[in-house]
Length: 287
Ligand SMILES: [Zn+2]
Image (cartoon, rainbow, N blue to C red; front, side, top):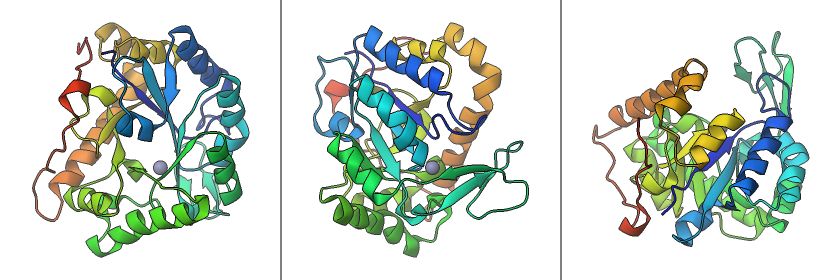
C-alpha cells in the first residue's frame, strides 16, 4: 500500500511570516493532482479504509478565517476535500501575533500587530456543505496534557456536542492543541466518543501506532511536500534542505508529546490502539 500522508496547516494566505503563502499552497494542490492522489477527510481515512487507492488528507488547525476565505476557494478549484479542526471557544475572537517571536495573544496587546480572526459558525456549516469535515480542536485551545482532569470533558465532549448541535451531524475526529496529550487526555477523547485524534508527531497515517494519535506532516516547501507524497519523507536527501528550518519544530513537538505522556496522572505510556494490520505500512525510507 502507498504510504498515506496527513498534511496539516494553520493560516493560509494570511499575514506573513506566520502564514503559508498561497502560491506554495497552490503548488501543494498541483502536486497532489500530478501524482494522482485523492484527498479525503481524516474521518474517511479512519472509517472507510481503501488500501488500493492513493490517498492523502489535508487538515487545517485552529479554525482561522483565512482557511475559509483563501484555502477553501483553492480546495474547490482542485476538487479537494479537507478536515478543519476548529475551536468553538474562539468564535468572534481575533487572535494577534507578535511578528518577531511568533507568540500569540487572545487579546489585543502592544507589539502584537498581526491579526488572525476566526471562522464563524455559519462559515463552518458552509464548509460541511462542500463535503469538508469539521473536527474539534478542543473548546479553548489549551495544552490538554497540562489541563486538570476535571476540565477534560469540557474540552473534548462539550466541544463535540456544541459542534454537532451547530452542524447537525456527528463530529468524528479530534486534534490535540499544540500536539499535547497524555493518558488522561486519550481517555477523555475516547470517552467523548471520537473515532480518532490527530497529533503533531511527524509520520505517515499508515504507520501511526494508534488511531488516537495519528501522525501528520507540517510542510511548507513544495519540494518537501512532494518528497512526503512519494514516500521519501524521512530520506536524508529530502530532509537535508529542511533540517535547519524545521528540525527544531519537530523535535519540540516530540518532546512536548513525550513530556506530557510522562507527566500524566499515572505515569504510564498510553495503551496503543492499533491500526488494523492491513493498513500498517512503514514508509519505504527511514533514513
Ligand atoms: Zn492549534
